[in-house]
Image (cartoon, rainbow, N blue to C red; front, side, top):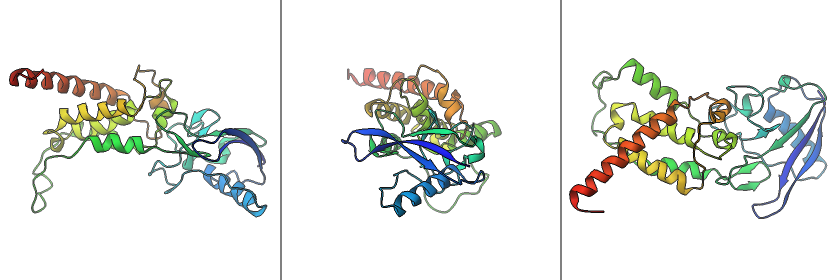
Length: 257
């Protein structure tokens, strides 16, 4: 395959950026998108040019590092697929492909296709800890979890924190990510003691990071490589409202506020 790439190049956070055209020649249809980028970078390096900076790690759809907008779509044209799982057979020979970083205010560009997604880490950190007994390992069946709750928790836990939800959202909201992290623990017995405090803290951190509000457009679940449902956002809203009401009651009872 022979392809034409138009790639966003930006030397640093404060530097101006622009689209630069490159040729990708003799690319195997079985190559992954990142392998294609490797070939292009090898060619650039051999001729003494600066290679294209892009994030990657596991290349198995697990770590969420491979964050790219491909032809205006987060992670490219295939549903339920991270960029590292996208194969070049998904494109036609001779195709023109636009490659850009996530375009989200809370994800400032570091260089080229790399963005700073530490805002997602701070949302998780705001959730704090869970109360759990210490000591020897508990028997596997000592804490009963219904099949329905376990399934919902596991579906939410599939989130890899790539940020595609925010990149696809017209509002730049990371509500799908935040909802998944809240819903994951909110469905399990171990997450109950801090459940509503956690929801309050994580939603407040989400807003403080500069992400937009959710208006349920639904683009987030379409872009999510793990196809997490926007139902997690509904569960987040429920826990947030309960937490807010509980906090008001506590303040009222103590004479605060």
